[in-house]
Length: 319
Ligand SMILES: [Zn+2]
Image (cartoon, rainbow, N blue to C red; front, side):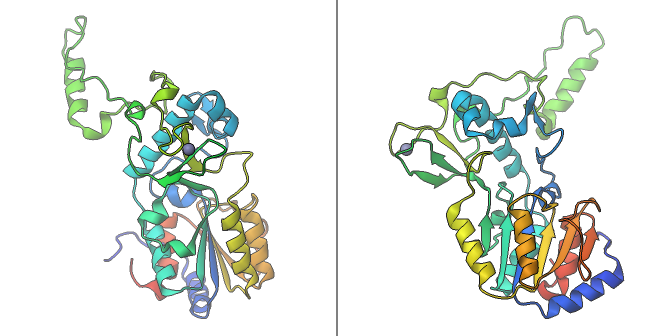
C-alpha cells in the first residue's frame, strides 16, 4: 500500500540510520504517549492534563479510587471508550512487523491504551510498564482475580450519555435555527455522545454498587489494571526486561513519542547505551529528547505514525 504522506525524514539521516539498522540484532523500543497521539488519543499527561475540572493525575491514585470510585471509573471508562474508538496507526503496525521479523527486538510501552495489542504486536515481545486499560482486577487484598475486558461500557452505569435528540425546539426560538442544528447533530453519529471530559456537561453520580464487581470473591470492586501514582511498576515485567538487557550487547534503542526523562524510561535509555546501543528518537518536539543526544544518535522530528514506518521500511517493507 503506497503512502500518500510525503516522507519528512531528511535523506542523509534516513540513509545513515538504514545502513546501521541493517546490521542491528538486539533492539529495544520505548513507547510513550506521542505514538498514541498519532491515533488521535488525548494523553492527559503533563500541564493542562485536565479531565472535567480534575487534574488527571489526581484521579490516577489508589486514594482517589478509595474515596470516589464512581468518578475514577467514569474517567477510566471514558479513556477505554476513546481508545476503542481510535485505532492503531502505522507506527504500531510497523513495530509489530519488526517484532515478527526479529525475535531479538523488544518493545517497552508506557501506554495503557491497548493500541499495540490491537496492531497484533507479538505479546511475548511487548512489555507494558504501566499496565493496560483493558485488564481489570479485584481491589480486595485477598483476591487475585483479573481478566482481560474490552466491553464498552464495562457496566451499564458507565455508559456515556447521549445528547438529547433536541427535536423539540424551544418555544422562544422562532427561527427554527436551533431545531435544524439539533437535527443535523442528531444525524451525525459522532456528535451524539456528550463530551464528558468537558466539565460544563453535567454527569450523573455513579453509585458504588453499580460499578464492576469481582465475580470471584463477590466482595471487591474491580479496578482498571493500570499502574497508579504511588504504586510499584509490575515486578514480573521489570524482571523480564532486566534479564533481556543483561543478556548481551544492545545495538539500537528506539525512543518513540516520549521524552524518556522519567524513570524507568530514562533508566532504560541509559542501560541500553551502556550495552552499546545507539539511540534514535522520534518526537514531535525537538526539545523532547532523553537528555543530551550523543554523537551517532538520530533525532527524527515529526509524527510517529509517518516516521516510524519510514525509517523501518528497509527491514519491514511497506506498511
Ligand atoms: Zn475478588
